[in-house]
Length: 374
Image (cartoon, rainbow, N blue to C red; front, side, top):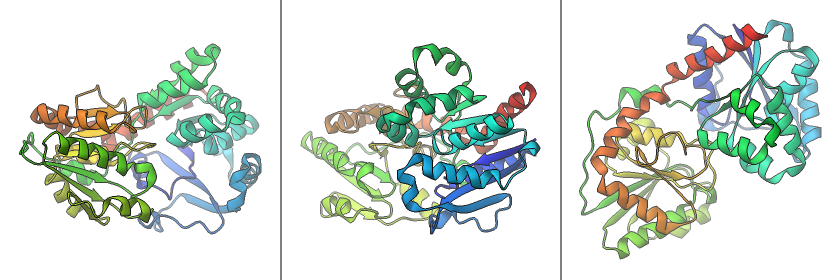
């Protein structure tokens, strides 16, 4: 089984390397094409210089991304000159518009089938704001052999909101929900029993980059509401600072502590010293920190209709919220406090679905089905 992976996000998240490694463990040969802007600098944890089977090419200018056709025509021309498409059983496009368009064009020219993943950016940016590209997005979905969503919330929004009624049934039939996995470190070190908490002091934690999209000010407002209700709150913010103005808004508040980005081992201890994970991001493709926190028995607060929503029934591992409603966030934290031990145990027992070995087997079944039917 040989797969051509088209993934412009490979150097922006460790998820992609972990998936590639897990597929290799299943004896699936994956070659990954990574189109990049000239001068692109990968995230520090995503350089992967030792990786094999990666073709990373700086094939367009940073300004090209403002005009979809110019950028992607350059990528299409580059990829067509680099690969013998007759060698591949199928392609895996890791986003609908940017990567899916390239797979769609190759499919039209060479007949190679493709599976396409729908990311948060596809819904929150392309479908929502770039109305002129919606028809193209639907066309890419129609021609895909399989469509992968990382949550049922994304599947519902994509098909029900942005796809014409006449195509919804066929798109539903070839759609699957496959979540991202978390590093095996969190599975090996998962908490083994239900957590309890000291209700006299509620210790909240956020882990992620500090920027406006992460919505820290609304969490701060929810904390203020809880304090007004008589709760003693401590809120720990862990992560690197992208937007200093966002940190400046909260860093002098006495119940808030900021810790710079840390490695897995110290983060494990920080999770274990906390009670509830709270990250109601304005937008979120998935949010690996939610299952990481769950592995340590922490119930989670996440945003309705974003990447983590729909992984579990409401109240099982935590709650979704309107990310702009601090009163609702405060209410759901109280709901967790009132049923803490049960929800904590559910979190620990539920992280097996974020195991990369299981996820790679799910993808292998998808690839094999496509190859059989092609």
